[in-house]
Image (cartoon, rainbow, N blue to C red; front, top):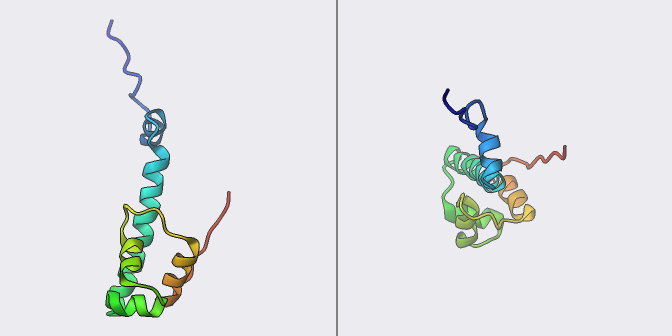
Length: 95
């Protein structure tokens, strides 16, 4: 008789939780989606990074950090300003 593989039938989420990577992967995914949505809105409005930074009343380097999916150190205030600069808004839910 062969040994049963403990990972067969498990989900990616359960695997990531077992390996202690779930929160990191989830945070990266959230930041990637936010950065991508902002970049798409900027592109749709033909908005350069310099002009976007000016609308947000911030520096271009701060905008670069916001658009970088690797950088999780972005404040809610910065996200709200970025969304407003492209005519959007942030909606958060606690469950």
